[in-house]
Image 1 (spheres, rainbow, N blue to C red):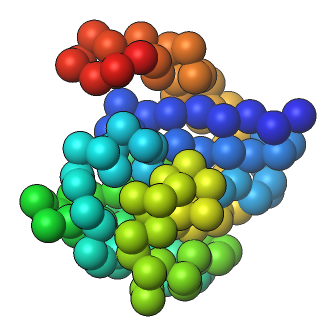
Image 2 (cartoon, rainbow, N blue to C red):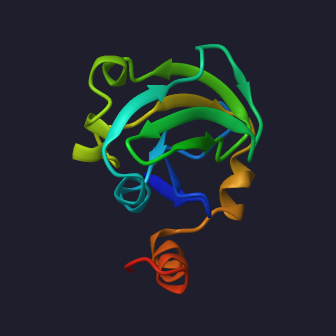
Length: 132
């Protein structure tokens, strides 16, 4: 069963089996990339880096601004989407698919419960000036 959750900072995380040690994929939402505009650079975390929920994990730069990308959960980076080094606009094209940022081994699957599901995220966006 695939689980996707969202943060208030507009990151998404998808995990196939939410258990300790499971691999999850992380990126920014379509809403976030729309707000940023044309993505021109992505600074990805190094493989092996330990991440703390809510801590800085990556940086995304657009023609408008630079923005931090935060770790949705505690864990360790196991893979980065190196395609983004040469094609950062891939995030604009498919933010919640091929434009993913990194994969991490999650430390505490219970942390998923602190994140929003799709319905709650839609309501959050609507309440904060975005489209549901």
